[in-house]
Length: 122
Image 1: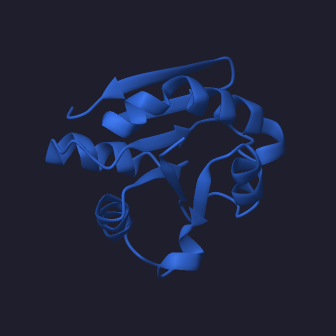
Image 2 (image 1 turned 90 degrees about the horizontal axis):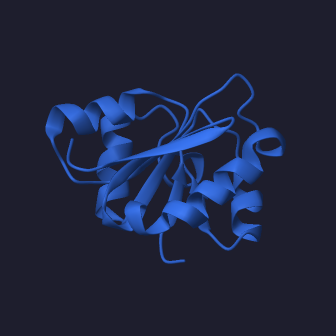
């Protein structure tokens, strides 16, 4: 698994040990950048450092759509309960299934019962 995952501030740092135990290299934004940084700053950092942005925020997909860029990839989780103990198995399964898409440039949306991928640029 060669992709690295950057977890956005709107998701719990508890995702880090869960994803790392599944073999994914993971950082929470609070450990690498300003917790109050704008989404564009996070996207720029992720692109420069070859990370996939893992978020609950719809703005990251919007940024990619408006800029027509082919990266960084975004893993977006949707649902009411986005804690690792609830959504962890779904996210790990989606990462395993779609890692090649994320390496190439994609938006992966994971929600209960399904996941979908859009290849970048949009």
